[in-house]
Length: 233
Image (cartoon, rainbow, N blue to C red; front, side, top):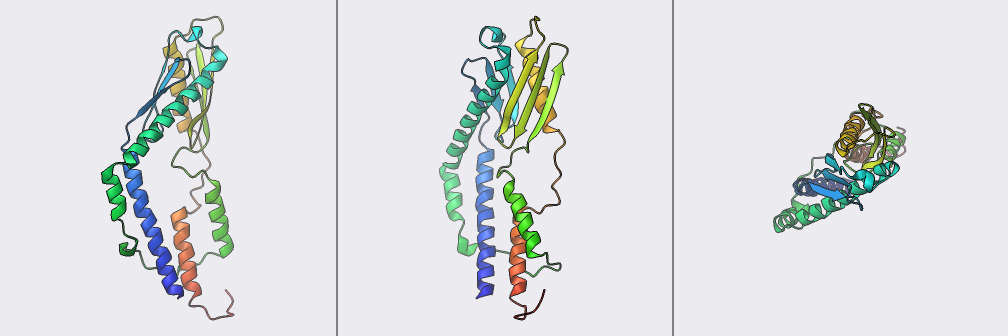
């Protein structure tokens, strides 16, 4: 009975992975999306993965926004572009060809790898700790939280904070009393964004992925069925 349960769990894991691959492939084909803030001062373009591709700041920005509001306008424009991106992704997933591909994935015909007891068996406590660490991380393929900043000449400075949702915070400052062009501000934001992308991040590469944890858990269960009742580990 235990062996059948393990095989069913392994098959379900493989089934979910196949569905995920189809969905990811369809979503990656969604076109890039654009968004503007409510004043029409900031326009951004994001790619299918939510990454910033382009930003344009109106040359008439001083007539529409105070300097302290520029950052919030950037975040608003990104949120609107993200909404457009999600809508495009949903339309891509609703494509008859994609739906047919999803329907063709049969749980009963999915080939799952046999579950073998691990050579080195991690403790249940370690598996639990790794699982908690993974589940505490944002469930997204986006960018871990990081901050970048950049200055263009002596005219404009920008700081951008990213997390798995994209740009979540932006601060812009300009030289007091100096006419600063929209293009200069946009350049500072783009450079700060690039800096945030490459900012040092916590290295958690030692923590197994969710897929790896599932395989380890299945292997642990497989090993348990061969143990003598009452035996110590």
